Length: 490
Image (cartoon, rainbow, N blue to C red):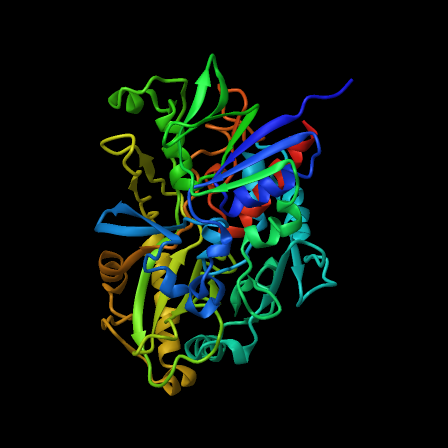
């Protein structure tokens, strides 16, 4: 007896959606349609492929979607990729996993299969690490090529930061994905090819061979208006323009801002909020109610002479500990673009662990973009940031910093009693690590299936019940790999 082919639609070809589509299409009894609102990855220009120019892309070129987020002190932009490969095409390429306690907390909250020992092998299998190919912590056969920038490839500011932090007492870390080496200062692992060019998840997973599969269709430049839901089950999607596509299962992978937005537009979300927009409720769930992000100040500096180096803009990081070995903040220089006349860099600081929760809601009309409220800083946040400012102040007095000739663009005395409050009020930014808007445990079950709606899943950063201690890019890859495995065996 011939088994029926199962048709799966993946909405969003970003970091997770590219991985998921490639893995699901490995199953000969599945037919996969990937729908991406942005252009294909053959549109990548030098702003995407040349790591040193990534900061130029952050100013809002076509491959970047900017969404405003309201904070206690004003409005700040949040960045997501709007192109095949998604935010993996415009991020800092920091290929971090977070820390084991992050995932053990997921398991402790009742999400079986998501503890560190469950997910560790998935992280390892996804990478092809050129620096540690024989380490038990790293893989050498995965689709993502990983290495760390060499000292001579770093910008002058990045190199001075690393050397200066060691001078003032921080430990040099060779592998910041090894928790036993933390805290300390080291170089981000990044996904680049042998020529030092960015490798996105679409380039790594949706290779020409994969895209040649008869059971995979990749459509770009198409936007989904709504999910088609009837009698408690999803039956497909309706595109902007009216085209309807039927499916046996739909996976929403539109990112932590647009996935909840699509669910709410389709009648899945807080019933009272949907009623305000006259949207019929298919499932009353706390969609968008528990957003997390890494927030913190970015302090601008200028230094003498050229930028130097070919590394991406944010490639050296201090993983700090304000309370012993409990690593709880990142501090790093974001180097300017090589094309800028004045050589500037931004010293950025954010808290790795934060219990604050923001929200994502619908705007005045369903067609408008999401309305985002920032998560508040935790009560001990200023104290933890105070420690980070003290370390940055020590760095300012180090010999490498003095030799660089750096000076603040907007002078802030990092040692002043009000330095943290002033920086938070004037210089707070989002690090584009939005998570938790459709989390497992409330909106989703442990297999990322939407509660109360059959045939529907969410797979991207929005499923994370708590934010990992670090950049979220590789966490999205891990989630997509694991859910794809579950779907292929179900």
